[in-house]
Length: 117
Image 1 (spheres, one colour):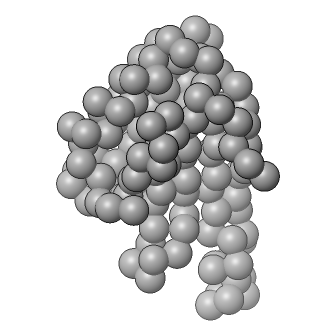
Image 2 (cartoon, one colour; image 1 turned 60 degrees about the vertical axis):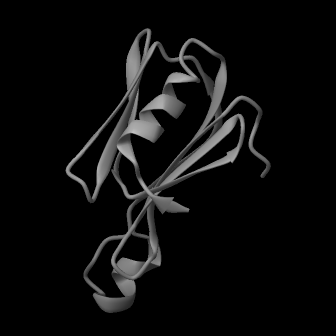
């Protein structure tokens, strides 16, 4: 993965507009929180191969972390804290946010074909 380039990611997101796609969205502080602070709560969310269609996609950010929003007919999907991206195949975009130690904190992936599990 490489650091997010807003223009390139926006161009890539636009390629998925108005298509039936599969989304993987994951957030976690996982065991990271409780390893160093026994009073910390573990939180996370995970969804894989949700089939959606969105009519707008937007990336915004401050140069170090980014938010990507996908506007559907009756709602939104968004991920905040993204730092890195890669075009895995010509129809599969992977974005992730990593903390200072390189640990995964958030992932948003979009594909025209289902993700393997």
